[in-house]
Length: 177
Image (cartoon, rainbow, N blue to C red; front, side, top):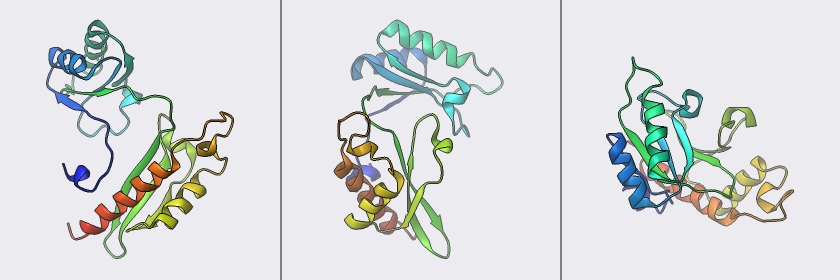
């Protein structure tokens, strides 16, 4: 609810407790879906086999959830997160880091499986203006991926810039928390 209050776009998701609830959530959302195993303290779920993408049926969801549940018997899952499958874009990480002396900063990085391999993120102090959001994107996207590099298909830079600005507004508004 907090992210929506700041007009930050989100992929719909449902958190469920067990496999049959994951199947029901996937049927409500509509196939294909992504399922992620919920495990406290795990930052990179894909490394542990806790992410399954493009699941196109109830049986595929059941199978993926069962496989995730078997991964580590000593650390049982706290349920599953079910989301619609979103494809055809470029993954980014947008976040906030707060320094006690400097205040909140907005972070932009290329995302996905290789998030750490892409190099350092771009960081700017909050709030973020339209000009700063554009410079963050340009600094990160040196090859022009969002302008259609190698695909000829430009992607939604304006949406990414708006998201950076919204996250910056939220970080600034909540800086004392």
